[in-house]
Length: 219
Image (cartoon, rainbow, N blue to C red; front, side, top):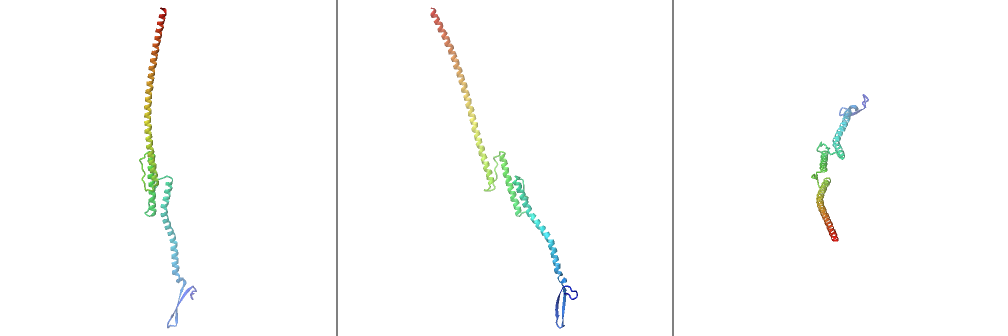
């Protein structure tokens, strides 16, 4: 301790050669440790200020990373509900930006496929989906459906032509039958007229024979 103040201190002594005495230095602990205490206070203040700043920076970075993912998630939810008008904004050129571009490409493909299906539903069988790859299951299925519809329409057209031809044949047959019936009716009428005339001739002949018989009897 400091022999004069009694405060905690460190004493350093150095003998003085030839003088017979020793040089003693007393340094109070408060003065010796003052730089360390100052450094500790500086570190504490720095840490106290840095922690909120670092936390804010972490939150900003997390928000920057998660915001595009949240946009993709919301867009996927809208597509799941059938809304194909959604697009995800591309805000960067990193992996998240590449994810947004890929998602927009998928949405564009679904819109193209929906447009082709809409044209087919309106009767336009010339619409053809654009295949994205050999493994494009949706495009291949839609192409197969359109091909089947084209074949079905062709079969219906052929069947309609056959029915039309059969109708013409039936109409021609009916006309022929009607002409034959008219001819038969005319023939029956002629036969009936001839029978009537023959009956009259026979009746006249019978009366003539009866008159001749009466004349013979009177003679």
